[in-house]
Length: 277
Image (cartoon, rainbow, N blue to C red):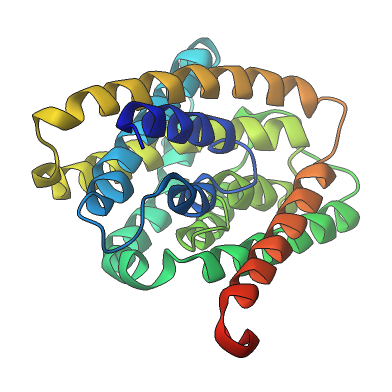
């Protein structure tokens, strides 16, 4: 299969799923075998490593550019505001837990958790949790992402650590964490977008440095194509998603997750001898 075609498809998948609560990593793990990219193949390390990381940076650049005016206003320090009330401080404390867990657990996650069975279970559990949280949280008290308090930002950051499990979804974990501490859906999604910027840039640059030896001259074009496609698709998805959640709940994403997880588990069992996992 042509590498440019693979780059386009994977760029679309990444851009579509990165900022929706459905897990971009999980979708990438499920999509790669369909494109003939299998663990153990000589090219697997590139597609599952450097390429996957590089196109994530394309997605995060899209949200950074899309939200820059709003983010700029929030990060300007009003005169007299204490450090603990500054939005940058809130983002930092929300970012740190996942940074620590990701650094310490990166190797274990790469070697043991990036498999379809883990993705399927995480999709189902995450979908159920979304339905439960939406059922329990009735009246949000925070209507603006900038109004989140420091303790609530810490809670969201701790919940984000769950997204280290492939299939959980970074955006899904942070949005549900934000809803759980009283944020309205639009404010929760916006805070999730902002938190993605330091989280994904730090993780992406660190991982890209670790995978730098996998990149050679023949990979430049697929990387460029995947980056551009991911950027464009992510931009469109963020814009559409922000309009969608103004009048809708996250129920449709929860149902999608559960159905997809069940389908993947059924596929795994159908391919296992005597139906054993």
